[in-house]
Image (cartoon, rainbow, N blue to C red; front, side, top):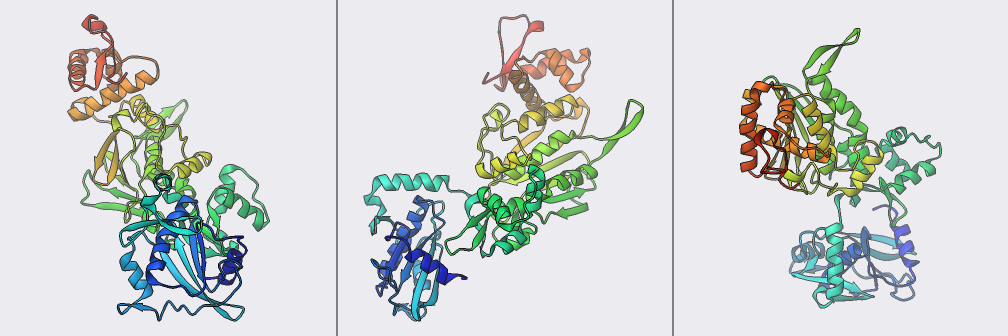
Length: 482
């Protein structure tokens, strides 16, 4: 690790030991180290620090450099090096590194411990925490335990470090900061310090305790020049696959984006639009080509897949598949809201900081209206309703090209009826036989067919009549939750 001297000297300037910092001279009992790793990792999370530290060779009170006899390479427990032994005794989410450095010609050993993620770090199946400068069992401190779990539940992917220990120039070399300034319409500073100010303020780049910098997962996912530079997220690239027919037998084109989502989004939408079938329409005196899919619909579906994916599911990322009769957009994870309330529900995202930044960068509105726009744009073009399906560990949204009413599967007709009722409800209106016929582009002769569809939707508890006593021809309906 670079800048170890600077890190140790910065830590020595701390007035006292803290919940994330422990100084020792020659006390390197294995069990004590294991308990302290657990305590310091958990305390780092509690105190919202990325790392905590144990430093041998420093006086615990005066912070004078004493040097240490501790050698992490020669100390063995039951024939194992100390580091290997610790990893067998600590929980799987423990992440730590030993380093050595010479300061004032004296040996100092630094143990860097990453904060606990998802659950407390335990040693020999016991969770520890720092209380002042002491290491205690977490279970004996229920108030602290509750606060820690609150922090763990709110700890997120965005704030974790994708690449660390970078000088400012190297950090900026890896991110597409020019796109950030272009989209926000901010004149790009000529001074590197001022550029770094913006990157640090938005959490794209973060300061480290050793004076160097790290690129956050959020910064890398959104602004990486090459996602392959970041081992923790390179599998989160966006894939676009076009097939020749309505199955996956023959691939016509395949493209994998190598850039961050913000840097790539405009090009991605244009690329997908160019692959979609189009039709020629006359607009006034001019002919123009128009996609058979509303651009608002597939733009929102793609943006939602990027923003709301579950980044904790590794090894897979968003994929856009284009068939002759449909587009399928699949992302890791499930929605945080009931899919039947996806139209009217308040906005909710598992990646709140990422969603907030993407809203400022005009990729999304963060108002929970993405599905509203998808449903409305499909209705206006009298297309089948966008379908949402949940699979093990993933969500798929399907947009269909225009098809005869008789060819639409019955379940999709019911779903379209339900979404139509949701759209009408948020517009302050009600569904009728006539409005649903218009939604599907059907003539009056289909009135009986639509009545049967409405009856089935009522039986499936998707919609309900406003007033069951109304005459059938004047009946109006609203969503079941309305």
